[in-house]
Image (cartoon, rainbow, N blue to C red):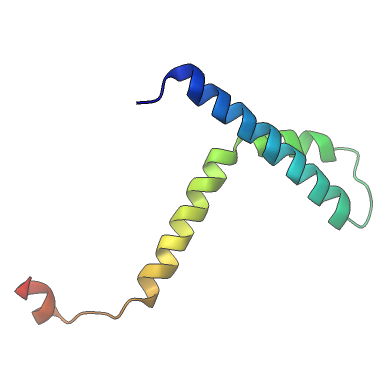
Length: 78
């Protein structure tokens, strides 16, 4: 298992990378430069693990909807 200092280092590195990415994307795609772009980017970077979990959950829902449904007889036969 990973130690606490390694997990914290991974979290903070992810925080920095996601914050920079959000800031750059916010400045690039916004029509007007909002004064709070940096703060929102830092907050978004702080919750990046939640965003990652959301993406994984959404992708699993998409995969499950694409699977062929099984009839009740096929499910009970297993």
